[in-house]
Amino acid sequence: MFTLSSELIDREIIVFDGGNPHTPPIKPPYGVHWQSLSVRRLHIQDNIEPNIGLTAPRMGYDISPFIRLPRQMSLDIIGEMGLQQIVVSLLACETLRRTTLLRGDHKRVFTDYGKPVRYTCVGPQPSRNSKLVRPHPPFMQSLPECHWESLLWLMKRAEICFRTIADSRVISHLDHAKKLVNYQTFKSGSTVDHSKFNAEFFGGIGFGTNVFLRCHTDADFTMSIIQVFLKGKEKYSLDDDVIVYFCFPTIGLAVPLRPGDYLLFNARIPHCLSSRCKYEDEIITTSTYLKTAIVGMNNNDLPLTTNQARKLTQLK
Image 1 (cartoon, one colour):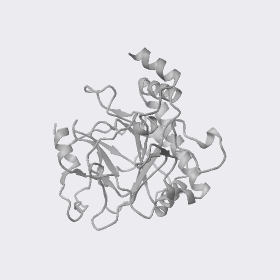
Image 2 (cartoon, rainbow, N blue to C red):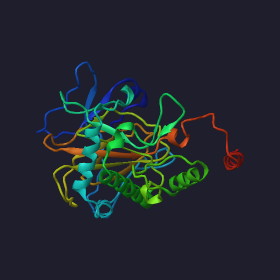
Image 3 (cartoon, rainbow, N blue to C red):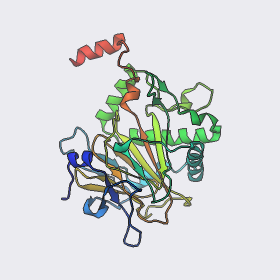
Image 4 (cartoon, rainbow, N blue to C red):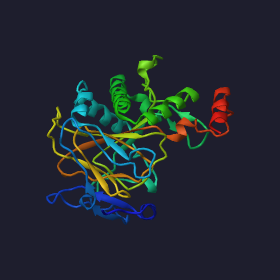
């Protein structure tokens, strides 16, 4: 099985080309030197049975590297979602952000050669200049309420997916953290203070149009969720074509994703999103996550509460 070492991934910019033979190969931006590999060098693990999901052995990790929901389950979860409204809301956020989000060279985001990268993150974010956590980036203040509702609906759908399929130890880990730390979760821009306008435990949504990523790891507190949308398609089917691959080069696996698929994954394992399979497709990729810095309140100087001190004593 073809695999890459973590040391190589840390040292070089590794990207995966998911295009078919009829799609032009990806090209790096000017001044960037990357190592572009075909996704077909990895073992592409798939299952087209609608009621059977996909996962991988733990292989030394505490939890499985990934879990792709059964296709039928994914379609059922998004069945009540207005797909076009979701796409419109995501594009509205992209339009409000006048400058591209910079994730740093270690987590660099790419797109088609010669075109600007369109990638945005919304939700609680740790401040770089203080020990505070902002509920949302400033540009989100002017987002209309109808789009807030769509984003929150998207987040809550992801949490339903998470509750349905995640390992029981992962769920327990989150539940205990939520009881001990009053960290911020994703919430609507509405002034109404009600639980239905807040996510249960996830913090942010990152999304981009026609993007692919360098292989990297993330400091996420729990498993993250990838979901992909195909613009211009109003309803997804069981037999839709694969539009992109999610790659785990250190374990030699690539997971094909069709429109609407949910993929839970361990972000501490080196991973990346390939370029899209067909150049003519317009796809939006979303990532739902909870950063460790958010759970830690972005402040290591905070004193422990009584409950936190008691739990620490129990763990010791």
